[in-house]
Image (spheres, rainbow, N blue to C red):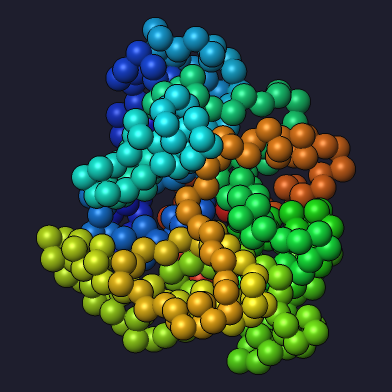
Length: 391
């Protein structure tokens, strides 16, 4: 089959690789019909090479049709149309029963002290072959699927794999009061959905992003969008009676703009041999924290900061005095996809498309064009906000 493989920093290739096969009786094989590039895939493209091997198959936002099931699979049949959640969970362990599928104790990657395994996402999360390919092996298939209907197009359902439940969780964790003000830092795909979910729930939504096309897309959905300037925090605080937003969702993460020193350190660490760079990546402060610090500045006293963007440094410097003094609550973590599907599925099937799932994809191309689209997405070129690949 064809699959997108990692070859090195900013170097990807679509190659012929062996078809996946049933390895355990609980597996299924899915023929992929659509698969998306996630903002966190760019971390693999740019930063997390020390935890990848040449030839690793990327991608964790797939959907398709079941073509084979293992002998112990009872809840799936050949021909079923499914979305595959990005985190791999069993559905029956202590964590899964509590709605913490991203911490699944059956698939936890204990070697690296990480939570549940993920598709297509480095040794830190199990190095499981990903879904930017023609076929995907799905472990624990009875639980790791979202069965969907046959009539609606893929784009109605595809984002259930990651970014839509990630955004939903971000808003849930933000713990807004009724009629409150939500600020969103970053209007990439997750930020777009965070903002739309906020509007759908009746909150006043203020969002910040430096890219005009992203601001324009958000404004189509009732969001008040602002450019990323030196004065934007003060500007938004003025719009909230000087207090700041009730809650802020940081939908940016470790590759935020700002701090050229950390940018240089990220680059330098990436050039070191893996045996040296891996412990540095795990133990030092490697994140550019501009978006997070702005979120802490912008939230009102007693408010909540919810992190949907991915951070990776264990020694990042946080403004603890400010956080303590302002009595800020913080929630964060990988999304527990299955926890939120019952809430979201009726909205994506609603003919009025209240979350605008059909107004996110800006580039739909063949899998063969994936390497060039990673570059386009990273550079925010050609109005690129969301890329969907067709194997």
